[in-house]
Amino acid sequence: MDLVENARTRRVYALKRIACHSREDQDKFLKEVEYMKMFKDHHNIIRLDGHQVVPVNNVASSIVSRILILMPYYSVS
Image (cartoon, rainbow, N blue to C red):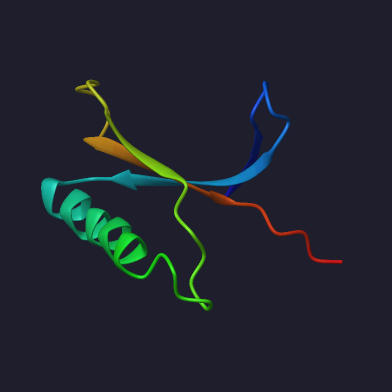
């Protein structure tokens, strides 16, 4: 999980990066995105602010894509 900031609004987000080693991995993690969308208004589930599938075109790598999931950042204090 990474902490990222919108340069324009200065809003802070949590960014989850998932490396997919196969098309099946990618489909499995896209299911997580679908669940986050389905339960977006549930008070016990963190809201999805955005997602993206980034293809990896490197024959030397076993990774076929990365899924990025953007969520609000909640400070623990």
